[in-house]
Image 1 (spheres, rainbow, N blue to C red):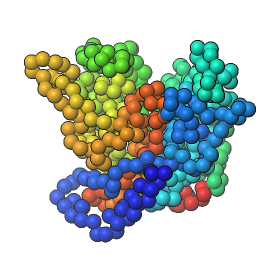
Image 2 (image 1 turned 45 degrees about the vertical axis):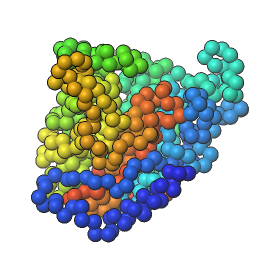
Image 3 (image 1 turned 180 degrees about the horizontal axis):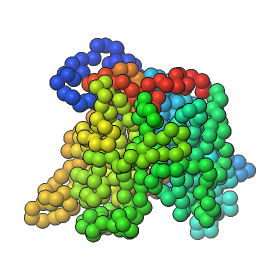
Image 4 (image 1 turned 90 degrees about the horizontal axis):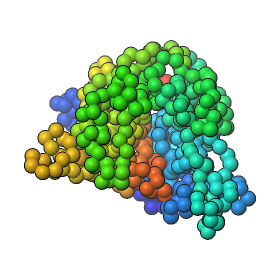
Amino acid sequence: MKSLAAGVFLLALFSTQVFAGDDRDRDHDRDPHVRWTRNGAPTDTSITGGPWTLEQSGAANGLKSSGYCDANGNQIGNPGTERMEPYYFPSIVGHGKHLQGYFDWRPKDTDEGVVAAFSNDAGQTWTFQQLVLELRTHCPDQANKEPDGEKDASGGNNADNGDDDGQGHQFVIKINGHTFLYTLVRANNHIDVDDLAIHELTPLPGLPLNGAPALSDAPTDATSGLPEISPHTFGLKNPDGILGVVPGSNPLTIIYEQKILNGDKTGVTALPASQQCNTSWATFYANNGGLSPNDDITFLRLATTTDGIHFNDLGPLQGLNDPTTVSLTGTRWLATAGTILKLRDGRFGLLFSGGNCIDADSDAFHYIGYAESTDLIHWTVINGINNPIASVFPALLSVNAQGLPATGAGTSLVTIPAHTPVVGNAQGFFAGRVYAPSATQFDDNNITVIFAGYHTQKPKNGLGDYRTIGRFSLHSSQHLVAVGQDGDREDGDHDEDNR
């Protein structure tokens, strides 16, 4: 595969840059902020083994679930090494080349589950270990019919199961001798209303998710009237998932996302019409495939815990986003996944994802940014929407002085991002979405970032190229104390135990 060949080259290049006395950080004493430079261009990744992948199927031809099952109704897993899709929301721990990954595997409208995989080459290639909490095991299109009732000439497996709303946004925390897997329950009337589900794990070599059931044990869209799963978290507000653990924190401190569904037009959080996306963006939406305005409100919030179950919310992070902005260059929404870094002078860094009204989606996938803080509450954005770490394909719009879509006198053409992203311009596999940066430390000045990308903004518009796991490497202008929850090596080289 071309991506594998490119990966070997990039790893060689990365090693050269790391150990050749790189002078990119020579001016760090004159700049208090971390400045990032790239170690080569982003690449997609591959996985050996595991469940069905897009690349082995006919999905690229518009057949949503082609090749998902054989003629006897048995699921067909990954037959060898394939492009790593449909995977997203990576959550990665480890150090150097040896990484342990947890991923949300989600074939559109067909299935969902949590997958564990490991890498020995800094995230370029992955080896499947385990699939748990799978939504369903039966095959799509069991009647072998197209939606119009005609025989499917491709041989079946073209329809879907109606939804992919299982458990996702997985995150693993070790605390007080326990290992907990946290997930978001997506079922109607439960998503972003219930607490996060908790499963206690008893990891074994090669089975890091041991203890979690093979099949989902939470309410589904078909059983949405059932009560929320127990055990679950207490004290988090409308949690959409956990972004990360503050390295070395005691008590253990997390950043998580609060998502208030339809919050900008309902209840006590309702906003004036002028602060809702549809007010200024309605014409843009109508002219771009009939996009629907999104009315969710999102915050990243800080919380502590002493047992991994009960959390003390410390309030929303400030300085990262403005839930009222409708500007092209503002950040309205933040995504659930990211990475917290500890810097040498006691400050903290944050890799995060953001988006705004142009995306018409609160999943916040327009760009990957970077911010810094001294207290974990107040943040200064260093790399934002106009000078991001990574971004989707550039957008050129006519806007007025307020940054709102407009035509005529007093308008100007604006491109976002205004500057080339740190990792370079968007590549095809993340031209539509780029988010969920999960970073691990390679050495004192370099990190590996695993992220999620889509070729187009909506999976339905690119059935053969969505939810792709990508990778890039960044060089820091300052030495890094810790990166992510595994950065201070509290758990040792536990990734080696999972081979």
